[in-house]
Length: 195
Image (cartoon, rainbow, N blue to C red; front, side):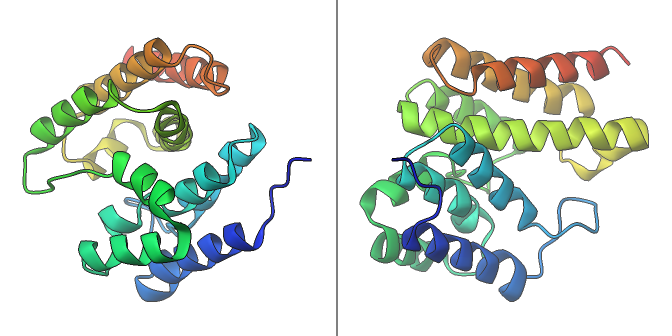
């Protein structure tokens, strides 16, 4: 029987809340919405398609190393000690490796890495992209092009990068249980690209 709730998943929820909400009081980019809504939504998307416990946990924790307060080395060790090597590997697979590079270089490197992702990493990244892009489109529908001032790149590059990532994911993992959601999300993005 598939279970969405386990003690290990609850520990991941607790760590994500502690990191993003309690320790940092993070908000979503340019909005007054608690950042924790994003990793919780990613976890829910993954649970909906019956991802493994470790993939759901990685979804809940996927931004801790990239966006957490702790030293990345400490954060990595914390995840490994509490959730194991597989969860750490999944989180690391979707984390940016070098934030000192330009936006363009980081995104180019990511797309190259994406072609080597395992199916679990592709599923994790799918849930992340679905949540992020649908939020971008919703914000665009409210605020227009102005909302892209929150990003380190212009609208065309931000959307182009995300669409390229979706294309790679769909090519690498055609049986992805989130394929239809990715396709619908890509269609929404293409609509606002025309504006």
